[in-house]
Image 1: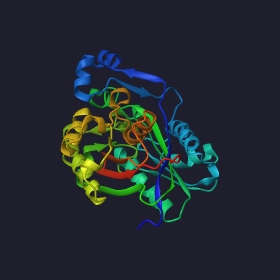
Image 2: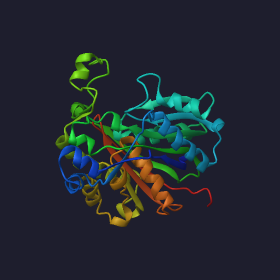
Image 3: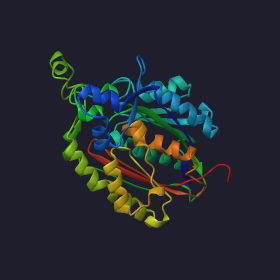
Image 4: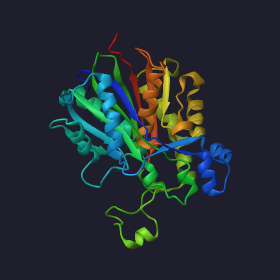
Length: 333
């Protein structure tokens, strides 16, 4: 049980400069730009340049979030980076972010739940604040998916983009911040989305490189059916867990995976378009970064006001899902 309210008090994002357009990909794979858009709902993606790693994106987004929340590094007691594409297998990318931002003696760890990762991190971070473990928590969703997408596989390359979104979690008045969550995993289906090589199951070797097993492997149809099954239902459950109805929700911010999946989830909730956030067209699927990027942009566009109730919902590797319901608190109020 929460002792004090905990919620998001500042946001930030970072998007690499390099643009990967449908026109470039169409030439590469012998298809048309319209064919790509019709399958994905994506026009453009941002991808990292030479020498850029996950922590570089995370640090840039985190600096924005710290500034937006008026937070000094000394106030952060925990750093969470939700990612599947960290700088190294060891140490955590969160530790690298902490060092770059000169945050002293914080608990730092990475959270691996793929596209559900930001929602999971939000749940952990809010509970860390509410129970008094940390006065403020820095949570970043950051991905460099262009480095794990098989350049010869059209299905994955046309989907993924790179980017980072960050939030600072802090104390808010009771009745605001995180009100409810719904999370779960169907572990028997883990093989639907996996990077086969590089772990203890299949260590990296000359053979795994020759077979290109360092790249993500995805059963697109299975993932699509899983998402159609769980995304809208999870959002409905989190609304009920908060004792609310769909009519009480002001904004729905889903993981930006695929326009058809987002549309189906919105249809399950019977949400009008003006309550739905979609920025998939310009960024592609940025996995754990997609929800905080969409949140930051919606806030900047004036779509989030004091007292608004937001549903954040995602699904991803594991296969997993997660939804969070927040009541937004603006410091100016």
